[in-house]
Length: 144
Image (cartoon, rainbow, N blue to C red; front, side, top):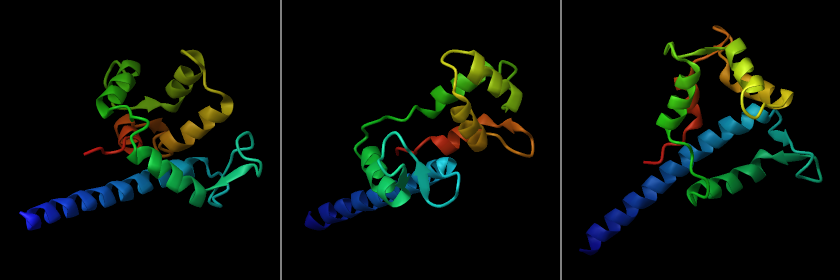
């Protein structure tokens, strides 16, 4: 009985380590989108007196937020349905021009800076469009 409980505890520990590693990877990818100077810092003048936040400070805070499940990520299928509304012919992508149009003319418009940040993360430079299934996979954290 003790050996079984110990093994189960170990599996839970391994799952947590795998989850943490996956979170670290996703957090790093997200952080890099805003790290315009590629110096492991993000400009956050409004929030920090120094005007920037270092990745080393950001990582443990965001990891804890994700582990505590304070903010639930949107399920992949919900994000997919949202993109499909914008892509009624189900091509699987939106052009850069279409994305800019939706981001600036529909709902709460994105600021120029927000738009540039999203475009730099989402748009495939070769096709000049967003293949939204790939983009969603990048954004979604696997919860299993």
